[in-house]
Length: 482
Image 1 (cartoon, one colour):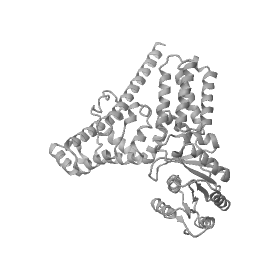
Image 2 (cartoon, helix red, strand yellow):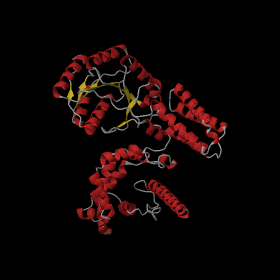
Image 3 (tube, rainbow, N blue to C red):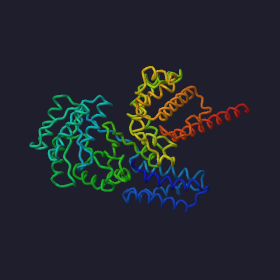
Image 4 (tube, rainbow, N blue to C red):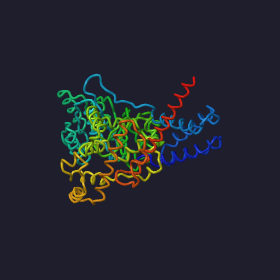
């Protein structure tokens, strides 16, 4: 996962700061030294790091933060705000033509994931705007580039215009644009050729395509794993093409995150989307404030909520809520929920979006093996219709049959059913606003669905709920005294 090393280093620096009752200028200097080293190790551009550290220090001293209450929290807030500012402050939407089609030209070096990203963005617009995109295959050099785009097109049901590898790319784009006009496509994506490095021939070809297509967007696709080289690439393409935005790919890989923190500050070009994962749906709008929260280990609830909203419609949610309240939630519903959570993406990444869980040291070693989910499915699929609908009938002989049918040991079947019943009970209590006695609900074995993590999250929620109740009670008593 991107930023893991940076997040760990920054959290350590902030934790050391929070431990101090009062924060001196010496403490601030030490913290800023640690932040500078953390950013440099994350491959952030040196000038960006220098300016960032200077600004944070000046703000902390200038606002007399050290003399105020909770100086450590105020410094964390300043760091968060400056991280957000460095990455662009707000999300920048796609440029859109006043009349169709909106033309989006994709550029980038070979291996950055350009062709896949074309498909991801086309699918995103198709799903969210009911768009009718056309993809133009203008990469005639890379072996099988056209075939790859055609496979992507088939996968997402979007047409691809191609004239083979013997036609000049500029002519391909010209004819593709004509077809888009005739078919009233509202978006056109031009998948251009890349190189292993920037050269004059490539840039001239891209400039000629730009002259023919008059794109509304020129999006530069950059591999986040290239670190500071990503900034040099962006500057090289921008000089010739005047790119309008950047898409960072492979943010889920072994990357230190320097590109995300450097590109906007150095080039002035906004990061518009980030790619995290191999699925065609793994493309997200880039929100600088949310990314700053994630870098500081503070979670990303807004993105988590948006992901959930895409998978759960209101009617379905109401039906599920009614089942939970009536305590009729069964294994059929359980599998439905599992499928929908699975569609949201990697479970480990989802967990890290939850505040409190995101910056918990235990998350460092937390893994959710896809095999565990597959084993759960096998157990449920080995049940009869009656057993799925009525879990209470699962006596020992039925459980032994399910274990044999799923190829899983009997203790695993028993544990899964026990956890299902506990989860069902927990959801029923929560739906009625009853949090009493829930601290021990998840059991202590820590197995299955990340039991320890569930325990920690639940305990935190219980503590927060108790605090809120105490505050409400105290306010009520104060009002009565008045």
